[in-house]
Length: 286
Ligand code: SAM
Image (cartoon, rainbow, N blue to C red; front, side, top):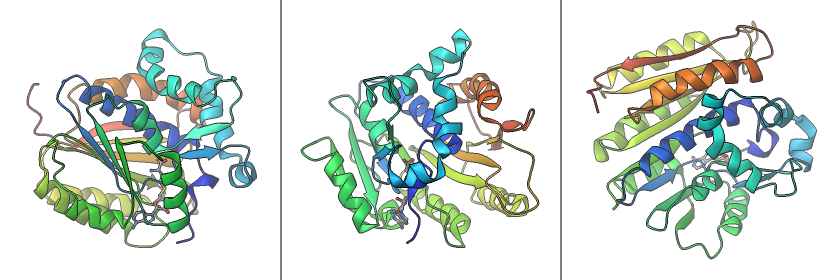
């Protein structure tokens, strides 16, 4: 396990992923009934943007750095406000120093009845994550293989919520594991929302991934991608993707408002593009 998210924290992919995350969790808040978020590949929770790792790559500068300085249309500003408020809450003196990872973003959005389960396999990262949530009875941090938790820890006792699956893609076979893991988890928690992150790097592989997802027979699979440049000849992170199963009925329209704005802010090339479409759509009017 060599992957260290600290090198990439706050980059364009994190920004898009975490904005989608906030929109899903905000939707869950619409009902009084408690929900649970399970974060299967949680990372360390809070990243030091001036630390050695983030400082070395500076990836955040073209991600959250650009967004914080951007002028937004009122409609976009309203949709991004919950995410931006969390970033500001983590940087109270107005200097960008800390970037919150997915579990910390979720934690900001929990009400007192809601719970977060955060899994992290890397022992050192799991320890750092546990320190962030020390004494927090609403959050459980477990040093465990997130793929195993998809079977063992589902369904949550709240019977509603979100499962975020955000693997590092450092070894081959991660797309297969995503589809297999989703199929297994969906059998146990078919009413849950699932958000699966993936890199847009290799178009052939993505076609196969989409076909495999369609073949699962799982209804209501929304795909969204944002590109920062045209596809590169060499494998390179040209874009960021997310699959959302059982998305909130509001999400598609929200993404159609948010992504054009993010595309302008985060892309390295004009018209690099984005997409929002259904891999399987059995959406009934909500
Ligand atoms: N979700 C985090 C966020 O958005 O802030 C970033 C997660 S990072 C992309 C992937 C994380 O998964 C790394 O911290 C890595 O150590 C961890 N990891 C790798 N394999 C794992 C596994 N099988 N189970 C749980 N965590 C794993």
